[in-house]
Length: 198
Image (tube, rainbow, N blue to C red):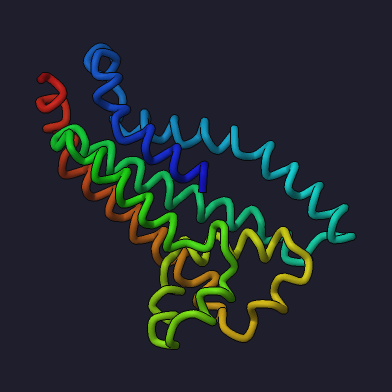
């Protein structure tokens, strides 16, 4: 969550903060938010490595699903990169977006099982609400991390987390976000410098 949050927040104001560089050099605007996201990914990898080591010793082995960790990282990065580009472009035109974004991310943090188990949500809400809740792509991403890192985790969630919830929802969301980012940038790229001028 820290990687996602820090990347999106830092990227949102990145074009404005680097407007002098953008004026002097000719390169696609999306390089700046993408470079921030990549830098945060590099900072995230050592902590992920430490978690893998801890999981190995504490749980006396690693999950078989750890072979899917690169896929989980790719989905996580794709969603983060797409949203970083979108909000960086939005912020150029609407400067209040950053404050709205911080509020939305805080709300999303509590809607995602970062510090509580998925079982607590299932036991506290009706089935219909839980089905809506589990469509949150970040629920899928976090559970994919737990599935790949924590031995025996799948047996805890297999009764109420289907393949679609775990893989399908984050995958579809990642594709949609990347497509939106691509087309939104293509539409706005010729006007970004105009908004950066003031």
